[in-house]
Image (cartoon, rainbow, N blue to C red; front, side, top):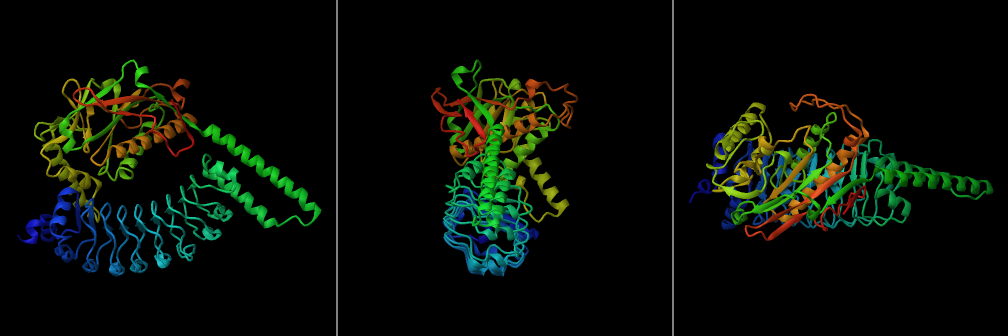
Length: 554
């Protein structure tokens, strides 16, 4: 059989002279496994500027012919099993985005230092012990993610003014033992995450990073216990002030003269006061999430899961949230934007998991998580009229293609990505209410019938995934913590209620009871067809969040 018959995606790209190609999922993985790797014809697509091959465990290596793709600007090879990468990557002079995350790499190719246009590097979730010494030669880097590796130190020449565009550095869950005082040379740094490493000190020089807005050092056993307590609960500004104070102390020198003893005591007292104030801020800043046990709920919801979903999209967790304030000002918009961000980041543009949110008052219980043939699944999608799943997917494909053509997109849209998850499926997953109406069609949309508004009092949250149950729980944990943060923000910023463009119109004044920041999360059980428990969320092992400014009350 001809290569192009086995790989119709490549034939289409070549024939239409497209500039992007996405290959992902079980179907692609099966072909890679059958033919001992990627077809060589992929390296003849010299017009490509976006190439993604992801979620293919059979992909363990990339051929050196990748160097022929000299127009590549984005190379996404995440969630495979790559154990190495050829050093010829340095010949991809136009490359701006390189994503090698979630593979089995133990070392990065030396050629990476020749990528002068590179601005985004993601090598998280590998087995790396070191970073290339020449990484600092990639002077256009703005985002680096090396989280979840075995890295013990940054390269000696990493802290340099040459990296004057580096704004985001994620290095959590490694073995890093030291952060240099020269970190202040990274003048553009806005976000630094070194949580769960082996740091004992945080250099005072960090306080001299002029644009730094967000830091995370949680999970490090610091020698300064006051500072350790602060990093586990305080805001970035308070921590930087504390470090700045320590830096001034160091500049003042020792206490050789008697007069300096008095100054030292004053400074110590002042720092103790700063730390005490910070501890008070920590307590005030805590957000409360109260768990309502299913036995205490007067109208507890249960979701029945049919056996057929096992081969389509098997994993589901749900809960009900009360106390989320959507009425004041732009609070509903902020919540919807936060959900979108979670979809883009933690959910991998919906390819890993999907969130849906419903108004509890509009639900007709009991609910069933089931599958239907695409021609029989009917839903009223958000902002659209009722249609079948076949019609909706076709509409979305056309819209995505039209958008790509109009904007002459260099990249594949997120919509392209999650639509591909349905390719080859004879049954589609759906959440159905007691009247037989489909209220959710993951990963595509949920129903206009249960859409939340500014007046919504109770929210039904669902997270589905084909990856794992833990993935669903992790996403739900993150969503609830984010909701707690948004609720606190709303409570602290007394915005007037009113229309925010969601079509609800004026909603009246906001009362003091509507601006309490406490969230109540009610457990929801999912059961099999015989009523046997599959999962209850949240359980005692859930919401064990690293966000120490959130208090979980059972």
